[in-house]
Length: 531
Ligand SMILES: Cc1cc2nc3c(=O)[nH]c(=O)nc-3n(C[C@H](O)[C@H](O)[C@H](O)COP(=O)(O)OP(=O)(O)OC[C@H]3O[C@@H](n4cnc5c(N)ncnc54)[C@H](O)[C@@H]3O)c2cc1C
Figure 1 (cartoon, protein in one colour):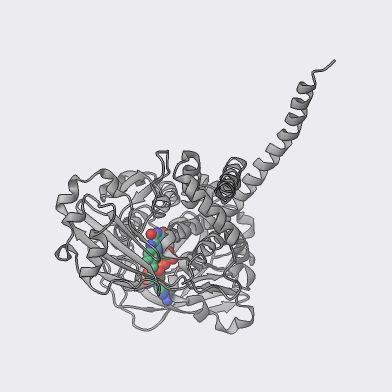
Figure 2 (cartoon, rainbow, N blue to C red):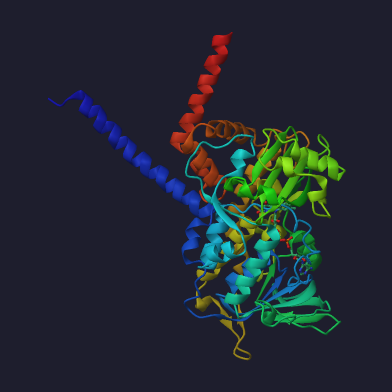
C-alpha cells in the first residue's frame, strides 16, 4: 500500500516541475525581448564575416552617437559622425542643455561600457570616477536599502563620462571620423536614403594631433552644404526632431508619437568642499538629501572635493529656488544633516548654477510607421524619458547593443554589393527589423516610467491615457519599495530591475508576488483589528 502523503508529494512534484519550466521559459522570453542581456555576450566583437563596404552617417556625436559609432566600427569599414558642437573642447556643448546636470549611470551603463572597452574600469578610475554598489532609486524614496549585495553603478560627472567615452571610442575605432556640421537634409531613392546633406561649421579640428580623437576629426573649410552617400543613416540627434525635418513629404506614413509632460524642472550647482574629503566614502553615491512632497534633492561627489548638488521640482506644486541663497539653504538644511552640510555656503557654489525646465517625454513609435530601409534612430531621438529615473544614457547604450545584435544576425548574403563601385546596400527591411527589436525594450521603460509619473497630480498625462493608467503597477511598485526597506532580497531585485540588468518580470516572480500579497493581507488585517 502506497503512503498517501507520498502520493500527494509525487503529484505536487509532477505538477510543479512543468510549472517551473514554463515560468523559466516565460522569464527567458521576457529577458530576450525586453532587455539587451542576451545580446551582451558578443558586443564589442568585430563582424566575423568581414566588414560591410560603405559609410555609416551618424547625426549627433553625444552619448547615442558615440555608442552607435563604436558598434558600427565593428560592422562597417567607414563611419562618420556629424556634430554641430566642437566636442573636443571641454565644456563646449551648446547642443546638450543637460551637459552640466547630475547624471547617474546605472548598472546597465557599466555592463555595456565594460563590453565595449575591456579596460573600462581602469580608464574610469583614472578620471576619478567611482564604481560602487548602490541603488539611488531606493534611497530616493527617502529610505536606505537594508544591507545587501546591490548592483555596481558608475559615479562620475556627465561631462567626464562623455569625454571618456568619446576618447575610448576614437582610440579603439580608427575607421570612425567626426566632422563639425549640422545635418539638414536627405535624398531618397527606392525607399532608402541615398545622400545625407550637412552644413559644415567652421572648425579648428585637429587642434592637438596627440590627443585621442583629434586625429579622427576632420577640419572643414567648406561653407556650402555637403552631401555624403550613406549605407546606413543613424539619427542620434537627441531632442532636435531631425527625422520630422528630413522626411516631411512622407507625412502620411510618419510613425505615431506619444507624449506626456512630467512638468519637472531641475537646478544644478557644483561646490568645492575641501573639508568634506574626510566624509564617508559612500558620499560618492547619489544621496537623497531633500525629499519633500514634489521636490527631491540629490548630492553626488563627482571629483575629489567637488560635489554636484541637484534639486528637482515637479512644478507648479513646488517652485524651484530663484536665488543662490535659497538653493543652498535647501541643501544645508537637509534632514538628517549630512557631514558636509555645515561647510556649504553660497560662496562655495560655482557659477553659473544651472536651472532647466525638462522637455516633455516623447516616444516616436518608429515600429508603427514607414521609414527608409536604411534609417534608424537611437537615444533621445527615439525616446526621451523623465531624467529623474536616470535611464537615458543606458537606453542610448541599449539601442547601440540592439543595433549590434541586428547587424550580427545579418548574413553577408543579404548585403547587396554593387559591381560598379563595390559599395554595399543593406536589405530593404533592415530598418523594420531594427525598430521591431528596439520597440519592446523601449516600451517597458516607457510604460513603467509613465505609470510612476502619473502618481503626481502635476503630470500632464498623454492624450491616449487617463490619470488611472498604470495604477496597478504603481500600487505594486509602492508595495515593493516599502518592503525593500527591510527585505534584502526585495531590495536587490528592485535595484536590478530599475538598473535595467534584470527583466521586469522578475518583480512578479512568485517569491516577490507572495511577499507583496502577504504584506497587503497583513495591512488589511491590521486595519480590521483597529476597527
Ligand atoms: C536634466 C537632465 C538630467 C539627466 N540625468 C540623467 C541621468 O541621471 N542618467 C541618465 O542615464 N540620463 C539622464 N538624462 C538623460 C540623458 O542626458 C540623455 O538621455 C542622453 O544625453 C541622450 O543622449 P543622446 O545622444 O541621445 O542625445 P543628446 O545627448 O541630447 O545629444 C544629441 C546630439 O545631437 C546633436 N545634434 C542636434 N541636432 C543635430 C543635427 N541636425 N545634426 C547633427 N547633430 C545634431 C547635438 O549637438 C547633440 O550633441 C538627463 C537628462 C536631463 C535633461
